[in-house]
Figure 1 (spheres, one colour):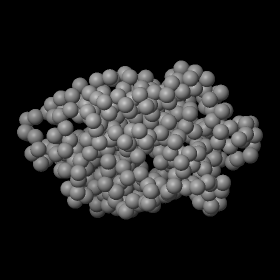
Figure 2 (figure 1 turned 90 degrees about the vertical axis):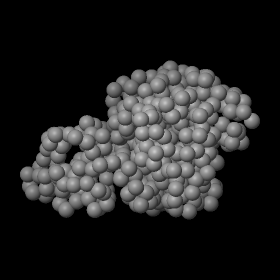
Figure 3 (figure 1 turned 30 degrees about the horizontal axis):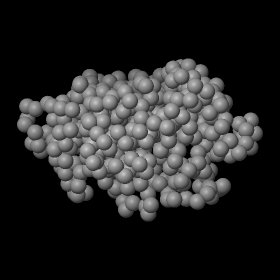
Figure 4 (figure 1 turned 120 degrees about the vertical axis):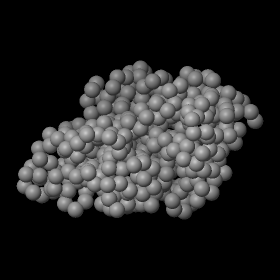
Length: 445
């Protein structure tokens, strides 16, 4: 089957869901109330009185109450090897596929020339043996029609784990008709470019933009900690649209890219949002405010605190469009309460940067020539009263600096050693692992 035919069939198969999403987006309250009734058989008013807000540990302790038949337990990415597993059901799989179908239909509609070539959806080598029945690759979120036509529309490198990057690079360089790349972190494509250049797979004076003359779109994370890397990727491929992905987690999908916005995935799950101790349904969100996401899904989650923060930036039709701000996380060993979102903003000037705790204080691991980097970042952190108070009391050492070369590649290598899959590795403002100065090559500054 030729790529254009496979893509056209895929596109047509996605259109019914795109039209259904369009109708839902015009009446978000009705769509969400209907989705909640399908999930739990009750009204929102009764639902919020009957179910408490929960976190992962609450569900584990309770033995996942009310959970139906589980297809498999899907590992989450994890940040330091402590992998959690989320129950995957047929209903949850269908919810993911609804969201992906709406996005794919819109993408092909707005860039019809994508139909004429192949795509690369990142397939990452597992670091552990896959669970029985689990998704074998990142294309597992596609529906049954899409999976049947994958061979005609996807570039699928035949790689060996020990030579993953080289095998993948060679296969992609041979794909002169490559039109679309779909991945998670933009650092993945930056590492691929580094591999091609370091191993002489293209002449030294060649430009990455010329390697794939028909490449039109790279879909990846472009918000929060990934913003700087997406910007760097755009510099390497100025002719390519860097299409920001929606917010998707192992537990569920929150937003999808539609018409340049990222509206809530209304037809997939039921959503609530926390702000300043209060919980709001999707139809009561306010422009410009930040919220923490609560999910109710066909995978057995009820008012589940996802741990992601979002900000309302406009609407698609009448549905809120949400931008990922960062993880709803706080580094807090001695009461310093370093919010990841605050730290992420302090690290924006760097090519690569993160904080990690070592020997009584935080260390700034960074790449690039930023004058007085530790002092500059610490000045930003001192705006946090709790952090400043811990320094004044001597509970924390002042921020120290550790300069790296090739920070993204080094970070990725260590994260894989800690148990993460390649495609799930993402930048973190504050990393919980405490051995970075021994694991990374660089020098103290």
